[in-house]
Image (cartoon, rainbow, N blue to C red; front, top):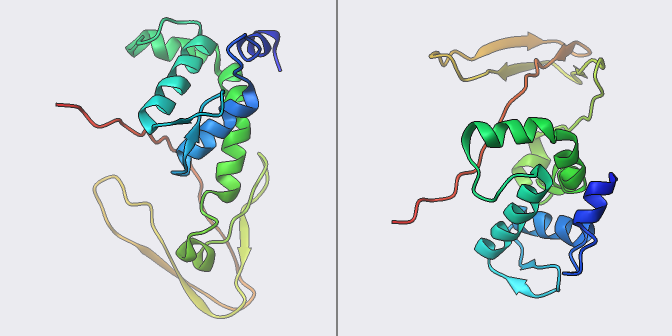
Length: 167
């Protein structure tokens, strides 16, 4: 942990990185959120606390938007990841754990850069996979025999959760 991150989470207000990660995890999984003083807080208050810490990590004033925010994120990307990596790992490992559809149909693999994402079929099957984008909705089907291997093309994706507008 960098000295700057250690300093952010060792202030007199009692906030620590573990409590912050618990707040992130609880908010992300829809559980009751608690602040650094172990008091129950609303989702809005939890979001405000997270935003406050992240702006401090980014070394920019709260409410900064647009290009200045993007530049700050690029400038401090390692510190941002350092703050959220425990939560990310936990959400990746357990975020779908209770979803029966996910557990029934999805095989999870963690691959390092350079590893091949290769799967082996146990019986004769038809595989239907498609990336639905670019103006077409064609799903490519491939017939596989027992013992055949296939891989799934991966790509970098970005997602954003937007707060609803308040009228």
